[in-house]
Length: 113
Image 1 (cartoon, one colour):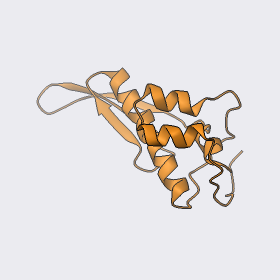
Image 2: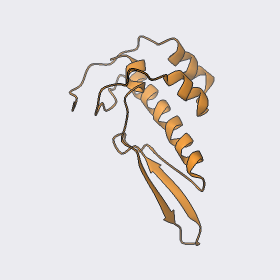
Image 3: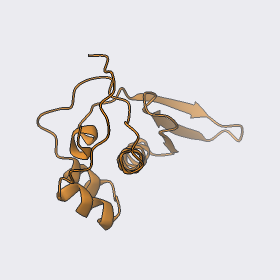
C-alpha cells in the first residue's frame, strides 16, 4: 500500500468526558487501533483536531520507517488526506509529501476486512 492509502484508512474513534482531581473536565479522544494515538482538551473540537494531527503524523512516520500501520478496514475511496492535514495543522513538509502522493510503500500486512 502507498502512504496515501494508509492515510485513507478509517479508524474507530473513542471519546469520553472525564472529571479531573481538581474538579475540571477534559475531553479525551483516541484511535485505539493506532498505538498511543490519543489527545485531550477542555474543548472536544480541539481534542479531535489534535487527534487527527497525531494520526497523520504517526502514519507518515510509520510508513517512512518501513512499518505498516494497522489496517482494520479498507481505505475510503472519497478521502482527501492532504485537506485533512491542512485543516488540523500538520507541518507544511508533511503536507507536501502527502500532496505528491508519494510512492512510499511498505510491505502489505494481513487485514481484518
